[in-house]
Image 1 (spheres, rainbow, N blue to C red):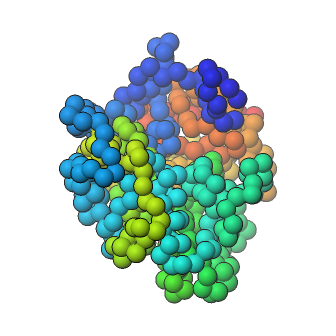
Image 2: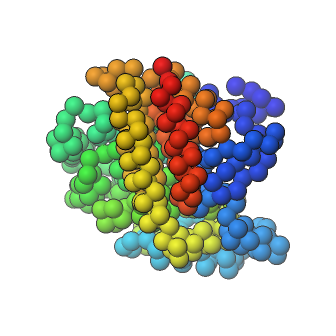
Image 3: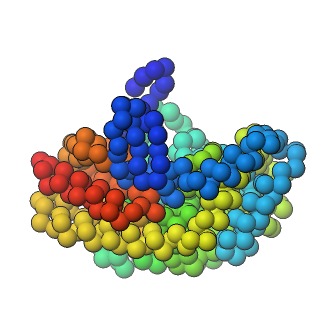
Length: 416
């Protein structure tokens, strides 16, 4: 749709004109206060306009706002070291980016350049960005038919979704591993890209079976395929760990970041690769970004990481997420339209369904829940399905969280 000369996707809520954002709240231009259960889709993990992050950005930008690719930047160098020091294994070389799409494109290009292989594996449905490459690898074909053809040699496998599968988690994992190995054993796949075991986009909050990432790492290593882990949505304490890979202690070959990386203070993304990968591809994969890692965004990223590590924000995320899931399960246990409440850390999904047997999501009911919650002072993320995704600030105050839960439960109980 078009509004004020801007193009909006179907599910974007252009009606919200936000005048102010602070902590766990948003204020509209007409003065209405909203509890925020969206955080811009895992962006403001520390709460909106975190004072330390904003102070760091303003301090740097008073001196300079830009530093081109060939110029030194002390803040950038300091942040690169801090970020790579926080990551597992040999992940020590950063490709600057402005967001998740750019970071994932850098990762896919690097994998091809390093392995000299062409095929790339992704899972559907998943969201890795809005370029031809990132959409080809995660978006179901029927959603992108009007913009095809996309990039060739991309292989899509079905995501091992425990909620919608009729198999046990153990059976589902084994079935997925068999299919993955069939593709990998030809030894012509450059990389597989995946999140850590939860789909943070596409409006479905799909969880993979326990041990998923471990098995994927074992197989990719066995067949010389790089493992790219997309932590754009799961990074920076969102899942109850500083990074999602820590749940299974997996060491990928490449990781990508954005969203919560700067806590919403500035555009920032990153591809981080093993040193040996970077040394081979730096002059082949065109890892460049005109606006990547400018002084202000780097200052935001550096302070954001410092706050997460200093305050161990992931512990608060784990505690709040457990409380949120437990509260919703208890209060919605007998609701005829609620089939499942699941989550990892402060990534939580509620499935509103038409039929609990086939688990068909009730898109109309989901839309009405979001609409009514907004009227009552709770902002939840937009979506096209009946799955309600919840991503509150990790630092949300317990009384504010309770207030948001109360609004949401009341609205869902009234849904038809």
